[in-house]
Image (tube, rainbow, N blue to C red):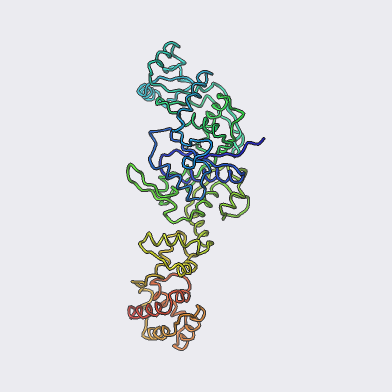
Length: 502
Ligand code: GLU
Protein backbone atom coordinates (compact mmCIF):
# COMPACT_ATOMS: atom_id res chain seq x y z
CA UNK A 1 0.00 0.00 0.00
CA UNK A 2 1.22 3.51 -0.81
CA UNK A 3 2.26 5.39 2.29
CA UNK A 4 -0.11 8.21 3.14
CA UNK A 5 1.49 11.58 2.35
CA UNK A 6 2.64 13.25 5.55
CA UNK A 7 5.19 16.03 5.26
CA UNK A 8 6.69 18.36 7.80
CA UNK A 9 8.18 21.82 7.94
CA UNK A 10 10.66 21.62 10.77
CA UNK A 11 12.15 25.01 11.56
CA UNK A 12 14.31 25.78 14.54
CA UNK A 13 12.94 28.76 16.47
CA UNK A 14 16.12 30.80 16.26
CA UNK A 15 14.90 34.08 14.76
CA UNK A 16 13.09 35.54 11.80
CA UNK A 17 11.86 33.27 9.02
CA UNK A 18 14.00 33.56 5.92
CA UNK A 19 12.21 33.40 2.59
CA UNK A 20 14.02 30.13 1.87
CA UNK A 21 12.33 28.71 4.95
CA UNK A 22 8.94 29.89 3.79
CA UNK A 23 9.56 28.34 0.39
CA UNK A 24 10.38 25.03 2.08
CA UNK A 25 7.13 25.30 4.02
CA UNK A 26 5.28 26.17 0.82
CA UNK A 27 6.62 23.21 -1.15
CA UNK A 28 5.74 20.91 1.74
CA UNK A 29 2.26 22.40 1.80
CA UNK A 30 1.75 22.16 -1.96
CA UNK A 31 2.86 18.57 -2.04
CA UNK A 32 0.64 17.64 0.91
CA UNK A 33 -2.44 19.34 -0.55
CA UNK A 34 -1.83 17.94 -4.00
CA UNK A 35 -1.82 14.42 -2.59
CA UNK A 36 -4.58 14.84 -0.01
CA UNK A 37 -1.91 14.52 2.60
CA UNK A 38 -1.07 16.19 5.89
CA UNK A 39 1.17 19.20 6.39
CA UNK A 40 2.84 19.29 9.79
CA UNK A 41 4.69 22.03 11.61
CA UNK A 42 7.29 20.59 13.95
CA UNK A 43 9.37 22.94 16.04
CA UNK A 44 12.95 21.75 16.34
CA UNK A 45 14.00 23.45 19.54
CA UNK A 46 16.51 21.01 20.97
CA UNK A 47 19.35 23.51 20.78
CA UNK A 48 18.57 25.57 23.85
CA UNK A 49 21.55 27.85 23.23
CA UNK A 50 19.98 29.09 20.00
CA UNK A 51 16.40 29.23 21.24
CA UNK A 52 14.81 32.64 20.76
CA UNK A 53 11.57 33.47 22.56
CA UNK A 54 8.82 34.56 20.23
CA UNK A 55 10.32 32.85 17.19
CA UNK A 56 7.78 30.01 17.18
CA UNK A 57 4.78 32.35 17.33
CA UNK A 58 6.41 34.39 14.58
CA UNK A 59 6.79 31.32 12.35
CA UNK A 60 3.16 30.35 12.93
CA UNK A 61 2.06 33.86 12.05
CA UNK A 62 4.16 33.92 8.85
CA UNK A 63 2.61 30.67 7.65
CA UNK A 64 -0.83 31.98 8.44
CA UNK A 65 -0.17 35.19 6.54
CA UNK A 66 0.91 33.14 3.52
CA UNK A 67 -2.25 31.03 3.77
CA UNK A 68 -0.29 27.82 4.24
CA UNK A 69 -1.28 26.88 7.75
CA UNK A 70 -0.42 23.39 8.96
CA UNK A 71 -2.85 20.59 9.74
CA UNK A 72 -0.89 19.47 12.80
CA UNK A 73 1.30 21.78 14.88
CA UNK A 74 2.30 22.74 18.42
CA UNK A 75 -0.66 25.11 18.44
CA UNK A 76 -3.25 22.82 16.86
CA UNK A 77 -1.98 19.56 18.25
CA UNK A 78 -2.67 16.31 16.41
CA UNK A 79 -2.42 12.57 16.81
CA UNK A 80 1.39 12.54 16.59
CA UNK A 81 2.22 15.22 19.18
CA UNK A 82 3.80 16.83 20.94
CA UNK A 83 5.13 18.87 18.04
CA UNK A 84 7.91 20.64 19.92
CA UNK A 85 11.02 18.51 20.19
CA UNK A 86 11.86 19.86 23.64
CA UNK A 87 8.59 18.28 24.81
CA UNK A 88 9.61 14.95 23.31
CA UNK A 89 12.93 14.88 25.15
CA UNK A 90 12.19 11.62 26.99
CA UNK A 91 11.62 9.72 23.74
CA UNK A 92 15.10 10.07 22.26
CA UNK A 93 17.44 8.45 24.78
CA UNK A 94 16.20 4.93 24.00
CA UNK A 95 17.44 5.32 20.44
CA UNK A 96 20.85 6.53 21.54
CA UNK A 97 21.02 3.51 23.86
CA UNK A 98 19.96 1.19 21.06
CA UNK A 99 22.67 2.58 18.80
CA UNK A 100 25.28 2.13 21.51
CA UNK A 101 24.21 -1.48 22.09
CA UNK A 102 24.42 -2.27 18.41
CA UNK A 103 27.87 -0.64 18.14
CA UNK A 104 26.78 2.20 15.91
CA UNK A 105 27.28 4.88 18.51
CA UNK A 106 29.58 5.47 21.48
CA UNK A 107 29.96 7.59 24.60
CA UNK A 108 32.44 10.44 24.37
CA UNK A 109 33.75 11.98 27.59
CA UNK A 110 36.00 14.66 26.13
CA UNK A 111 35.45 17.91 27.99
CA UNK A 112 34.79 21.12 26.09
CA UNK A 113 38.29 22.25 27.12
CA UNK A 114 39.90 19.10 25.75
CA UNK A 115 38.06 19.52 22.49
CA UNK A 116 39.11 23.14 22.32
CA UNK A 117 42.77 22.16 22.86
CA UNK A 118 42.52 19.62 20.11
CA UNK A 119 40.94 22.12 17.73
CA UNK A 120 43.76 24.53 18.43
CA UNK A 121 46.43 21.90 17.91
CA UNK A 122 44.98 20.24 14.81
CA UNK A 123 43.85 22.50 11.97
CA UNK A 124 40.38 21.57 10.69
CA UNK A 125 39.96 19.00 13.42
CA UNK A 126 36.89 16.82 13.11
CA UNK A 127 35.85 14.07 15.52
CA UNK A 128 35.66 10.93 13.45
CA UNK A 129 37.31 7.99 11.83
CA UNK A 130 40.78 9.48 11.77
CA UNK A 131 40.75 11.00 15.23
CA UNK A 132 38.34 9.09 17.46
CA UNK A 133 41.10 6.68 18.56
CA UNK A 134 42.99 9.60 20.16
CA UNK A 135 40.00 10.82 22.14
CA UNK A 136 38.39 9.87 25.46
CA UNK A 137 35.46 7.74 24.50
CA UNK A 138 33.99 4.30 25.00
CA UNK A 139 35.97 3.06 22.00
CA UNK A 140 39.32 3.94 23.56
CA UNK A 141 38.66 3.55 27.29
CA UNK A 142 38.39 0.21 29.05
CA UNK A 143 34.87 -1.04 29.63
CA UNK A 144 35.17 -0.73 33.45
CA UNK A 145 36.39 2.82 33.15
CA UNK A 146 33.44 3.70 30.92
CA UNK A 147 31.03 2.14 33.41
CA UNK A 148 32.69 3.99 36.29
CA UNK A 149 32.48 7.31 34.45
CA UNK A 150 28.82 6.71 33.66
CA UNK A 151 28.10 5.65 37.24
CA UNK A 152 29.57 8.95 38.43
CA UNK A 153 27.37 10.87 35.99
CA UNK A 154 30.43 12.21 34.24
CA UNK A 155 29.26 14.62 31.56
CA UNK A 156 29.33 12.93 28.20
CA UNK A 157 27.76 12.93 24.78
CA UNK A 158 26.76 10.09 22.47
CA UNK A 159 28.29 10.14 18.99
CA UNK A 160 27.44 8.17 15.89
CA UNK A 161 30.24 5.87 14.79
CA UNK A 162 30.55 6.51 11.09
CA UNK A 163 31.56 3.33 9.30
CA UNK A 164 34.81 3.24 7.35
CA UNK A 165 34.93 2.95 3.57
CA UNK A 166 31.23 2.86 2.84
CA UNK A 167 29.25 4.65 0.24
CA UNK A 168 25.88 5.81 1.47
CA UNK A 169 23.70 6.07 -1.61
CA UNK A 170 20.13 7.14 -1.98
CA UNK A 171 17.71 8.60 -4.46
CA UNK A 172 16.71 12.19 -4.02
CA UNK A 173 13.53 13.03 -5.90
CA UNK A 174 15.15 16.19 -7.29
CA UNK A 175 18.81 15.30 -7.50
CA UNK A 176 18.50 11.66 -8.51
CA UNK A 177 21.21 9.26 -7.36
CA UNK A 178 23.35 10.77 -4.60
CA UNK A 179 26.16 9.13 -2.67
CA UNK A 180 28.47 10.10 0.15
CA UNK A 181 31.75 8.58 1.25
CA UNK A 182 31.44 7.82 4.95
CA UNK A 183 35.15 8.47 5.45
CA UNK A 184 34.42 12.14 4.88
CA UNK A 185 31.60 12.44 7.39
CA UNK A 186 32.43 13.08 11.03
CA UNK A 187 31.02 11.36 14.10
CA UNK A 188 28.21 13.78 14.85
CA UNK A 189 26.90 14.12 18.38
CA UNK A 190 23.49 12.46 18.74
CA UNK A 191 22.76 13.05 22.41
CA UNK A 192 24.17 16.05 24.24
CA UNK A 193 25.51 16.25 27.78
CA UNK A 194 22.22 17.79 28.96
CA UNK A 195 20.34 14.73 27.69
CA UNK A 196 18.83 16.63 24.79
CA UNK A 197 19.16 15.00 21.39
CA UNK A 198 20.90 16.91 18.65
CA UNK A 199 19.08 17.72 15.47
CA UNK A 200 20.40 14.56 13.78
CA UNK A 201 18.91 12.10 16.24
CA UNK A 202 15.72 14.05 16.86
CA UNK A 203 14.97 14.57 13.19
CA UNK A 204 15.19 10.88 12.40
CA UNK A 205 13.31 9.75 15.51
CA UNK A 206 10.52 12.24 14.88
CA UNK A 207 10.25 11.74 11.16
CA UNK A 208 9.64 8.09 11.94
CA UNK A 209 7.35 8.70 14.90
CA UNK A 210 5.27 11.14 12.88
CA UNK A 211 5.16 8.76 9.90
CA UNK A 212 6.65 11.31 7.56
CA UNK A 213 6.50 10.13 3.97
CA UNK A 214 8.62 12.79 2.20
CA UNK A 215 11.31 15.06 3.57
CA UNK A 216 11.29 18.37 1.75
CA UNK A 217 14.09 20.56 3.02
CA UNK A 218 16.75 22.94 1.78
CA UNK A 219 19.80 21.68 -0.04
CA UNK A 220 21.97 22.88 2.84
CA UNK A 221 20.83 19.73 4.65
CA UNK A 222 22.07 17.40 1.92
CA UNK A 223 25.42 16.75 3.67
CA UNK A 224 23.46 15.59 6.73
CA UNK A 225 21.49 13.07 4.70
CA UNK A 226 24.08 10.24 4.96
CA UNK A 227 24.01 10.53 8.74
CA UNK A 228 20.24 10.42 8.76
CA UNK A 229 20.11 7.51 6.33
CA UNK A 230 22.54 5.51 8.44
CA UNK A 231 20.44 6.25 11.51
CA UNK A 232 17.31 5.01 9.74
CA UNK A 233 19.19 1.82 8.91
CA UNK A 234 20.93 1.34 12.25
CA UNK A 235 17.68 1.80 14.13
CA UNK A 236 16.13 -0.92 12.01
CA UNK A 237 13.76 1.36 10.16
CA UNK A 238 15.20 1.21 6.64
CA UNK A 239 11.90 -0.04 5.22
CA UNK A 240 10.05 2.95 6.57
CA UNK A 241 12.47 5.58 5.33
CA UNK A 242 10.81 8.62 3.77
CA UNK A 243 11.63 9.89 0.30
CA UNK A 244 14.27 12.62 0.18
CA UNK A 245 13.62 15.92 -1.57
CA UNK A 246 16.39 18.50 -1.18
CA UNK A 247 15.23 21.83 -2.56
CA UNK A 248 17.61 24.01 -4.59
CA UNK A 249 19.20 26.94 -2.81
CA UNK A 250 17.92 30.47 -3.16
CA UNK A 251 20.94 32.41 -4.36
CA UNK A 252 22.10 36.00 -4.01
CA UNK A 253 21.00 38.25 -6.90
CA UNK A 254 24.39 37.84 -8.60
CA UNK A 255 24.19 34.06 -8.21
CA UNK A 256 27.24 33.94 -5.96
CA UNK A 257 26.22 31.81 -3.00
CA UNK A 258 23.23 31.42 -0.79
CA UNK A 259 21.02 34.44 -0.12
CA UNK A 260 21.47 35.57 3.45
CA UNK A 261 19.78 38.11 5.64
CA UNK A 262 22.92 40.20 5.35
CA UNK A 263 22.50 40.37 1.56
CA UNK A 264 19.06 41.83 2.12
CA UNK A 265 20.44 44.45 4.51
CA UNK A 266 23.27 45.22 2.10
CA UNK A 267 21.13 45.46 -1.02
CA UNK A 268 18.10 47.01 0.64
CA UNK A 269 15.43 44.35 0.29
CA UNK A 270 13.68 42.13 2.80
CA UNK A 271 14.66 38.51 3.30
CA UNK A 272 12.17 37.74 6.09
CA UNK A 273 8.49 37.12 5.50
CA UNK A 274 7.30 39.52 8.20
CA UNK A 275 8.93 42.13 10.40
CA UNK A 276 11.11 40.52 13.02
CA UNK A 277 12.31 42.23 16.17
CA UNK A 278 15.24 40.55 17.83
CA UNK A 279 14.17 40.23 21.47
CA UNK A 280 17.75 40.62 22.72
CA UNK A 281 18.90 43.62 20.74
CA UNK A 282 15.54 45.14 19.85
CA UNK A 283 16.77 45.35 16.24
CA UNK A 284 13.98 45.34 13.67
CA UNK A 285 14.39 43.46 10.39
CA UNK A 286 11.78 44.40 7.84
CA UNK A 287 9.62 41.79 6.21
CA UNK A 288 7.89 41.42 2.86
CA UNK A 289 4.51 41.84 4.50
CA UNK A 290 5.21 45.21 6.05
CA UNK A 291 7.04 46.42 2.98
CA UNK A 292 3.78 46.07 1.13
CA UNK A 293 3.65 42.65 -0.49
CA UNK A 294 0.35 40.87 -0.90
CA UNK A 295 0.59 37.38 0.59
CA UNK A 296 -0.64 35.92 -2.71
CA UNK A 297 2.21 37.61 -4.56
CA UNK A 298 4.77 36.51 -2.00
CA UNK A 299 3.62 32.89 -2.22
CA UNK A 300 3.56 33.11 -6.02
CA UNK A 301 7.09 34.47 -6.28
CA UNK A 302 8.43 31.91 -3.81
CA UNK A 303 6.89 29.06 -5.76
CA UNK A 304 8.69 30.27 -8.87
CA UNK A 305 12.07 30.18 -7.12
CA UNK A 306 13.09 26.78 -8.39
CA UNK A 307 9.81 25.54 -9.84
CA UNK A 308 7.72 26.11 -12.96
CA UNK A 309 4.82 24.27 -14.50
CA UNK A 310 6.60 23.66 -17.80
CA UNK A 311 4.96 26.59 -19.56
CA UNK A 312 5.66 30.32 -19.55
CA UNK A 313 2.95 30.95 -16.98
CA UNK A 314 4.29 32.94 -14.05
CA UNK A 315 1.19 34.01 -12.16
CA UNK A 316 -0.48 31.38 -10.03
CA UNK A 317 -2.95 31.40 -7.20
CA UNK A 318 -2.28 29.06 -4.31
CA UNK A 319 -5.07 26.79 -5.53
CA UNK A 320 -3.51 26.64 -8.99
CA UNK A 321 -0.13 25.91 -7.45
CA UNK A 322 -1.59 22.99 -5.52
CA UNK A 323 -3.16 21.75 -8.70
CA UNK A 324 -0.06 22.09 -10.88
CA UNK A 325 2.69 21.31 -8.37
CA UNK A 326 4.98 18.41 -9.12
CA UNK A 327 8.37 17.49 -7.71
CA UNK A 328 9.57 16.59 -11.23
CA UNK A 329 9.42 20.24 -12.17
CA UNK A 330 11.59 21.48 -9.31
CA UNK A 331 14.98 22.37 -10.73
CA UNK A 332 18.30 21.15 -9.40
CA UNK A 333 19.99 24.48 -9.98
CA UNK A 334 19.87 27.22 -7.39
CA UNK A 335 17.38 30.03 -8.03
CA UNK A 336 18.68 33.59 -8.08
CA UNK A 337 16.61 35.98 -6.03
CA UNK A 338 15.76 39.14 -7.93
CA UNK A 339 13.97 41.81 -5.90
CA UNK A 340 12.88 43.71 -9.01
CA UNK A 341 11.17 40.55 -10.21
CA UNK A 342 9.62 40.08 -6.77
CA UNK A 343 8.12 43.56 -7.07
CA UNK A 344 6.88 42.68 -10.53
CA UNK A 345 4.90 39.78 -9.05
CA UNK A 346 3.40 42.10 -6.48
CA UNK A 347 2.56 44.65 -9.15
CA UNK A 348 0.83 42.00 -11.23
CA UNK A 349 -1.13 40.78 -8.23
CA UNK A 350 -2.19 44.31 -7.32
CA UNK A 351 -3.12 45.06 -10.91
CA UNK A 352 -5.13 41.87 -11.31
CA UNK A 353 -6.94 42.05 -7.97
CA UNK A 354 -10.43 43.44 -7.64
CA UNK A 355 -10.57 46.76 -5.74
CA UNK A 356 -12.69 45.05 -3.08
CA UNK A 357 -9.93 42.59 -2.36
CA UNK A 358 -7.34 45.36 -2.18
CA UNK A 359 -9.48 47.53 0.08
CA UNK A 360 -8.30 46.19 3.47
CA UNK A 361 -4.65 46.28 2.38
CA UNK A 362 -4.97 49.84 1.13
CA UNK A 363 -6.80 51.03 4.23
CA UNK A 364 -4.02 49.48 6.29
CA UNK A 365 -1.36 51.24 4.17
CA UNK A 366 -3.08 54.59 4.79
CA UNK A 367 -3.58 53.77 8.45
CA UNK A 368 0.16 53.17 8.89
CA UNK A 369 0.60 56.77 7.68
CA UNK A 370 -1.92 57.97 10.25
CA UNK A 371 -4.75 58.42 7.73
CA UNK A 372 -7.96 56.58 8.55
CA UNK A 373 -10.25 56.18 5.56
CA UNK A 374 -13.78 54.96 5.92
CA UNK A 375 -15.48 55.93 2.65
CA UNK A 376 -15.15 52.39 1.26
CA UNK A 377 -17.18 52.90 -1.91
CA UNK A 378 -15.14 55.90 -2.94
CA UNK A 379 -11.87 54.29 -1.92
CA UNK A 380 -12.69 51.31 -4.11
CA UNK A 381 -13.08 53.66 -7.07
CA UNK A 382 -9.77 55.32 -6.23
CA UNK A 383 -8.11 51.92 -5.99
CA UNK A 384 -9.48 51.01 -9.38
CA UNK A 385 -8.04 54.20 -10.87
CA UNK A 386 -4.54 53.86 -9.45
CA UNK A 387 -3.83 50.17 -8.90
CA UNK A 388 -1.96 49.81 -12.21
CA UNK A 389 0.55 52.32 -10.89
CA UNK A 390 1.39 50.53 -7.65
CA UNK A 391 4.16 48.00 -7.07
CA UNK A 392 3.96 47.88 -3.30
CA UNK A 393 0.89 48.47 -1.14
CA UNK A 394 2.20 51.73 0.39
CA UNK A 395 2.38 53.08 -3.17
CA UNK A 396 -1.38 53.47 -2.85
CA UNK A 397 -0.74 56.23 -0.33
CA UNK A 398 1.70 58.11 -2.56
CA UNK A 399 -0.48 57.53 -5.62
CA UNK A 400 -3.80 58.16 -3.94
CA UNK A 401 -3.36 60.64 -1.12
CA UNK A 402 -4.53 63.63 -3.18
CA UNK A 403 -7.93 62.03 -3.63
CA UNK A 404 -8.49 62.56 0.07
CA UNK A 405 -6.28 65.51 0.93
CA UNK A 406 -5.92 68.48 -1.41
CA UNK A 407 -2.35 69.14 -2.50
CA UNK A 408 -0.54 71.59 -0.26
CA UNK A 409 2.22 72.19 -2.75
CA UNK A 410 2.33 72.30 -6.52
CA UNK A 411 4.97 71.43 -9.03
CA UNK A 412 5.20 75.12 -9.92
CA UNK A 413 8.23 74.64 -12.13
CA UNK A 414 6.05 72.59 -14.46
CA UNK A 415 3.34 75.26 -14.89
CA UNK A 416 4.50 78.73 -14.02
CA UNK A 417 6.85 79.42 -16.96
CA UNK A 418 3.92 79.03 -19.35
CA UNK A 419 1.19 80.36 -17.09
CA UNK A 420 -0.78 83.34 -18.45
CA UNK A 421 -3.79 85.44 -17.48
CA UNK A 422 -5.61 83.85 -20.42
CA UNK A 423 -5.06 80.40 -18.98
CA UNK A 424 -6.32 81.59 -15.61
CA UNK A 425 -9.45 82.89 -17.36
CA UNK A 426 -9.91 79.57 -19.11
CA UNK A 427 -9.81 77.66 -15.82
CA UNK A 428 -12.19 80.13 -14.13
CA UNK A 429 -14.62 79.38 -16.94
CA UNK A 430 -14.02 75.66 -16.93
CA UNK A 431 -14.58 75.40 -13.18
CA UNK A 432 -18.13 76.63 -13.78
CA UNK A 433 -18.80 73.77 -16.19
CA UNK A 434 -17.86 71.00 -13.79
CA UNK A 435 -21.03 69.46 -12.41
CA UNK A 436 -21.64 66.30 -10.44
CA UNK A 437 -23.17 63.59 -12.54
CA UNK A 438 -21.05 64.26 -15.62
CA UNK A 439 -18.88 61.37 -16.69
CA UNK A 440 -15.22 61.70 -17.61
CA UNK A 441 -15.87 61.79 -21.35
CA UNK A 442 -18.37 64.62 -20.95
CA UNK A 443 -16.01 66.65 -18.82
CA UNK A 444 -13.35 66.11 -21.45
CA UNK A 445 -15.64 67.21 -24.25
CA UNK A 446 -16.50 70.42 -22.41
CA UNK A 447 -12.82 70.97 -21.70
CA UNK A 448 -11.94 70.66 -25.37
CA UNK A 449 -14.77 72.89 -26.58
CA UNK A 450 -13.92 75.55 -24.06
CA UNK A 451 -10.22 75.35 -24.92
CA UNK A 452 -11.08 75.93 -28.57
CA UNK A 453 -13.27 78.90 -27.63
CA UNK A 454 -10.31 80.34 -25.70
CA UNK A 455 -7.93 79.65 -28.54
CA UNK A 456 -5.93 77.01 -26.73
CA UNK A 457 -4.91 73.56 -27.74
CA UNK A 458 -6.28 71.21 -25.05
CA UNK A 459 -2.78 69.74 -24.68
CA UNK A 460 -1.51 73.05 -23.26
CA UNK A 461 -4.08 72.94 -20.48
CA UNK A 462 -4.03 69.32 -19.42
CA UNK A 463 -0.85 69.52 -17.38
CA UNK A 464 -1.92 72.62 -15.44
CA UNK A 465 -5.26 70.95 -14.69
CA UNK A 466 -3.50 67.86 -13.42
CA UNK A 467 -1.19 69.87 -11.22
CA UNK A 468 -4.16 71.78 -9.83
CA UNK A 469 -5.85 68.57 -8.74
CA UNK A 470 -2.89 66.33 -7.90
CA UNK A 471 -0.03 68.68 -7.10
CA UNK A 472 2.37 66.84 -9.41
CA UNK A 473 2.77 65.32 -12.85
CA UNK A 474 1.33 61.90 -12.07
CA UNK A 475 -1.88 59.99 -11.63
CA UNK A 476 -4.57 58.44 -13.80
CA UNK A 477 -6.69 60.22 -16.40
CA UNK A 478 -7.33 63.76 -15.23
CA UNK A 479 -11.06 63.67 -16.04
CA UNK A 480 -11.44 60.51 -13.98
CA UNK A 481 -9.85 62.41 -11.13
CA UNK A 482 -12.38 65.22 -11.56
CA UNK A 483 -15.28 62.77 -11.44
CA UNK A 484 -13.89 61.09 -8.36
CA UNK A 485 -13.26 64.35 -6.50
CA UNK A 486 -16.72 65.68 -7.28
CA UNK A 487 -17.65 69.15 -8.50
CA UNK A 488 -17.31 71.01 -5.22
CA UNK A 489 -13.84 69.75 -4.36
CA UNK A 490 -12.61 70.02 -7.96
CA UNK A 491 -13.64 73.64 -8.37
CA UNK A 492 -12.21 74.49 -4.97
CA UNK A 493 -8.88 73.03 -6.01
CA UNK A 494 -8.92 74.84 -9.35
CA UNK A 495 -9.54 78.22 -7.71
CA UNK A 496 -6.92 77.67 -5.07
CA UNK A 497 -4.36 76.65 -7.68
CA UNK A 498 -5.11 79.63 -9.95
CA UNK A 499 -4.27 81.87 -7.01
CA UNK A 500 -1.05 79.97 -6.40
CA UNK A 501 0.02 79.99 -10.08
CA UNK A 502 -0.70 83.68 -10.67
N1 GLU B 1 15.51 22.04 12.01
C1 GLU B 1 16.05 22.08 10.69
C2 GLU B 1 16.02 23.54 10.24
O1 GLU B 1 16.10 24.37 11.07
C3 GLU B 1 15.22 21.20 9.78
C4 GLU B 1 15.96 20.51 8.71
C5 GLU B 1 15.12 19.36 8.15
O2 GLU B 1 14.06 19.66 7.61
O3 GLU B 1 15.51 18.23 8.32
O4 GLU B 1 15.91 23.87 9.10
